[in-house]
Image (tube, rainbow, N blue to C red; front, side):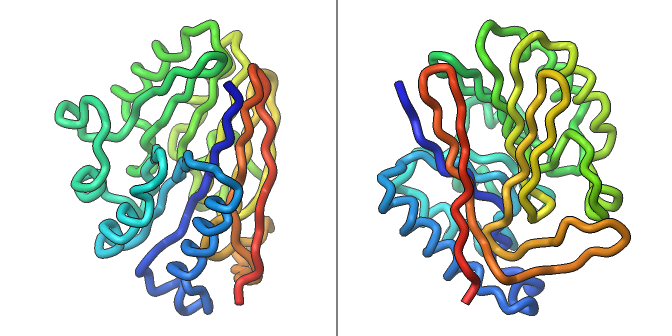
Length: 239
């Protein structure tokens, strides 16, 4: 069955920094949901960094009409999120990682909210990579390196171990992530990684300096057609 998914990340609700940058995160969020609804997309995957704990109830209330899956970012709290978001085995875990099986694809959702992937989670991932299906990984932090200052300062710790596990797989692997607040694509052997721009403010992809750009925000549409995957960005000007 063909499927369209809206992938949104890094909204940073109720945080002071976006406000200081001239960004109204709630307004951006409403704009995105209105656009998603107009395209008759009913599945949303959120890539992490909801914002302050005070925003969690409003955030999840806004998504009640959608089929929702999430990954946690470094601004998120597992204990807070599970008050509003239920997933299988949540009582037995202290991290939010899980899988979803589709006809041609296996979705793997990872928890990088601590800035690294735990040993338990990495062992679980290695087992979940054994499949005949194409693999789609959703994680807040990029796994493949990017030539940018934010990657030098704020990269996922010990990500080389994850990359090694992915390269050891014979499957095609797609990674969808955020964290860096810009658009980027990396391709190494069997892995394609796509970083999605933030739904709040952007960071310019530069070396030696971190420069904020509040001109636009957006999200990514992921379209599955049988065993193929296509994506396109939807962006809006920050007013």
